[in-house]
Amino acid sequence: MTSTVAGIQRVRACLVALLFLLLVAGCAPRSDTDRLTFHAFGTLIDITLYPAGAHDLARLESALSADLDSMHNAWHAWRPGSLGRTNELLVLGGEFSAPPSVLPLIERAQELEVVTDGLFNPALGRLVAAWGFHQDEPAGPPPDPEWIADLLADPPRMADIERRGVRLRGHHPELQLDFGGLAKGLAVARGLEVLTELGVEHAIVNAGGDLMTLGRPGHRPWRIGVRDPHGARVLASIELGGGEALFTSGDYERGYDWEGQRIHHVIDPRSGRPSQGLAAATVLHADPALADAAATTLMIAGPEAWPSHARKLGVELAMVVLPDGSVELTPALEPRVVFERETVRRVRVASATPGMDR
Amino acid sequence: MNLGLRWGDVAVVMIAAALVATSFALTYAPASGALLLVVSQAGEAARYFPLDEDRKVEIAGPAGLTEVEIHRGRARCLRSPGSQGICERAGWLERDGDMAVSLPNRLVLQLQGNGAPFDSMHF
Image (cartoon, rainbow over all chains, first blue to last red; front, side, top):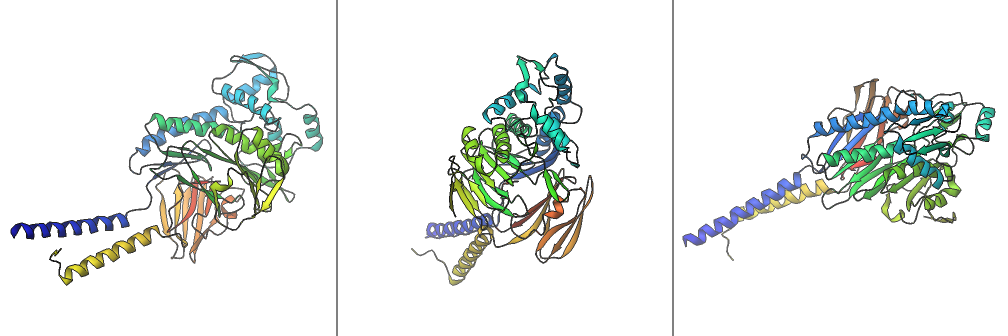
């Protein structure tokens, strides 16, 4: 009899304990991640870390900001640094040893210039500067149309840089490198390397809105909000696995108004003017540098040609926003995007034939 | 099987079960609107402001003051340093996930509601 009573008491104790555990679980904070926000690489860096409470945030911030700021100083398009010295030597036409920090960008940019048919051309830094974007606060006036025409009659190209091992020689007097469409991709990749070296297994490195994932937060995917290019609202959400980079190039990022016209920083090498026809181009790819450069390329390619350029770049997951707010996306990306508000959207394939409105 | 539970025990179990169910429902229910303004600033811990209390918040940053207005369950960047007015142009933040950015003051304003928050924002 005593043992029966003891058994009942144990069952009751277990029930109470179980209910208590369930109650605690139900009231637990929702976020299973930590966030770390700091300023580096000239932008806001937002690191998401899983699981929460498992990382030395101060140590991570210190290591990441040192690395990212070092890259920012080396690659800056208009402040003194490795890229500035490289630009000075390229226009002189003599042979010189490339700074180790700049050589990988030149190599990558030369490959990308070929595969984008010249739409991605970081050798046109002089043109970007002429439009008023080589300063912290972009400003006009825009360059003289005749000056643009003269420059584009024989424009500098990445192919004008002769490369023999680490030795470089410039073959165009107007060469000026500006890696604005590539550097952030390489910086995000380096940020993830730093985190991995410090023992982090599950994270997102977000640099001014462009991001890449590392691992997964437990058994769920990363949940990413995609902001409307022209407002505060969330346009869509997308779930990412590990090792996926999401980059966007848009007309809203850097710019100024000149005589009632919006001047943005994505310059079309064909016209020498800010690209037209798309408000934003987004690329999802495993290679963050390619995703960065491809987003710029699709933005320049415009509303008709973006699908064919995406295919040529090996980009299967891409989306563009048109000036009227409608969205076009590749067939492979469509099932992964959940639109958070009513949006006119079309699936586009490389034949450049518009699909049906949804 | 007689566990020796009396009516009082049953009542306690039922109330506890109801509490558990309610807490789960409140925690994991789909977003029904924003509840909080989350201010993330470089080098600072995130700050939270409830949206059900009208107020103006001044946030100091490296470039000056960013003034934020909370009014009738929404928030906006009223004034912020920077010649492009990017923070102000975002307008009213009204729904879960809506955000405004002030790069000169190195801060992000974002609304958070009942739903699972985004792990990161792409823009």
